Amino acid sequence: MTEAAARDPGFLSIAAAEKRFGPATVLDGVDLAVGRGEFVSLLGPSGCGKTTLLRIVAGLVRPDRGRVVLDGQDLTRLPPHRRDIGVVFQNYALFPHLDVAGNVAFGLKARGADPAAIGPTVARNLALVQMTALADRSVKALSGGQQQRVAVARALAVGPKLLLLDEPFSALDRKLREAMQIDLKRILREVGTTAIFVTHDQDEALAMSDRIAVMARGRIEQLATPAEIYARPATPFALGFVGLSTRIPGTVQAAEAGILTIATALGPIRARGHFLPGSAVLIGVRPERIALGAGGGPDAGASGLNAIRAALADAIFKGARVQLLFAAPQGTEVQVEASSLPAGAAPGAMLDLAWAVDDTLVYPAAEAGPQDLEAAA
Ligand SMILES: Nc1ncnc2c1ncn2[C@@H]1O[C@H](COP(=O)(O)OP(=O)(O)OP(=O)(O)O)[C@@H](O)[C@H]1O
Image (cartoon, rainbow, N blue to C red; front, side):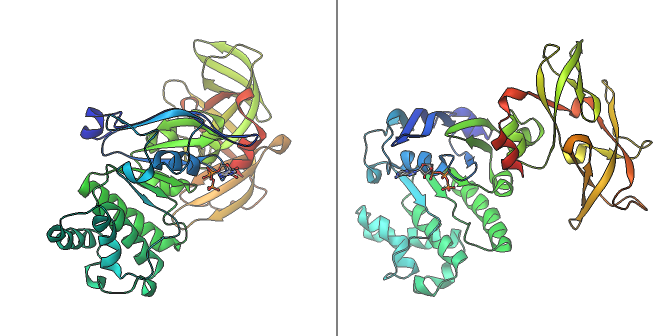
């Protein structure tokens, strides 16, 4: 967390937000605190309630229950235009009859800003998004990426306390999207604006966010930094939705000094955790934590290694890395990421795999629904 966010961790506070549409519960008691200057992404699959939560903060959807407080002010009953919040949508939503500068000036004029200040404010915000040269251009003659830059400048020009962005780059091609992500991060750092960013793209959330709220079924499953979510996903859903992983069901056989021995289709696997013998669990391992070869295994740490042999099913070339899929008994698939394909390894080859006991994640099986496996597919 940045210094400003640490000083004011509840700059935006959403408490117990609930929303139903007819019989469907779309938000099921969501709490979220965002620090001043922080960039928080709402990440989750389609329909999990991200946009609804964002629209509640914007004032575009009225929650059935719950409160939204921004910088000490209760927004719950305020209309959107009195909330001091800027919004950028996926579909640009620029005013087609105005040029670029006219779009950026619009909010300032609507708020009755000092006419002498409007020109310099527009110029400053166009410079921020690198659109100065196109100030007089019709927005109809802009590319998608340029339109989104104007939308960001327009939202920031009025100096909002909070910027909300709803999948703003999803219509752009991959290269442009990645460039826009880097740019937006720079811009927000420069102006220090607090932002909430809705996306279903995990790479986008991992690349941009100070913290990510992983959402599923109208709830926040985990709120943490990208690195924490990747290394220590709090739930099977977070494990499956963010990054690749091997997931193996098992039953705890023994628990001694905090080390579990778990019976699985791959044989016994050890993990750190606190479960009673007989508990049904789900084991997770990240692909880059698994090393190939019996000899040069990973650093075992204090708790030792898990070692298995499995048949190589497929190798997917990813440029700098190669993703290896291993078929294990009972339909289990093991995912490994390596720097290169081992010499002579063809589909069907039996290879040794090893990973540290400390890199073995374990969850109660009851938490893992079929949708968790679907999300990861
Ligand atoms: N105005 C509405 N009336 C009825 N149902 C709605 C309304 N708005 C949203 N929903 C439903 O609420 C659920 C959550 O929608 P929401 O748009 O918040 O999800 P999301 O996570 O943003 O998904 P997406 O990425 O597809 O936009 C969906 O099932 C959607 O169909």
